[in-house]
Image (cartoon, rainbow, N blue to C red):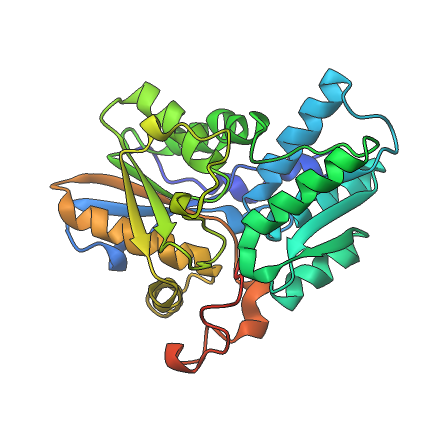
Length: 320
């Protein structure tokens, strides 16, 4: 491994959008169950709006502008469980595009506040349907009104390409080899983009998906068994899918804070749990997992300080 450098914390940029990416890769030595396996976290909460979706939102808007598929001042419509909407809201507010997001009605209040802060209009979908319900409603709205431009992160190749050309390259700049890469199964963009690039570097790299139990709304992850497979997902790239319960996701989110000081969103707990399980099965090597966002948008839920058995809406809140 190369010299340890503090590269992400400097630089000069022309505007906020240019600062997206180049996030820190941090070793979490207390998590590893095996002294010959090193676990690294890619801290995507260091992006401008605090999530990995800044990469995706920038990629989709850049592509739309380059292809001429969006006109100045045209309204953008997008289904989201929060983070992509917030990222789009920041970028759209800078570029002068009105934004309308479709979002489950049971997300945390911080996400609603951030969207409104950036000037986005919110349309609520049925919370019990999770992000699948938001997708369904947004597609209906788009079909009924052709004036909208919908980037559609679930089917837009700019989503995985943001990771293929960005996140994965950054990881390989810091690590000579990656034995396993773990990410949450949301839109599939993080797994697909990183998976393709990492397997080009080393076909033996394991690509592991952290997936919620069927029917559970685990921190923005989705179960493919719930009936919607995003068009950008190529299942042949994923070596294993490991399911995580809502309860375990929150327990591991608390564990990350307690043991490594990592203040992250609830989906990170589910991903970290899988990363540690994989590390226990390997003889040696580097395991990298993605921290999709920081914890600021989840403070109102009490997940960081409340015993898991006392958390309200444990199985009904849409966390990410």
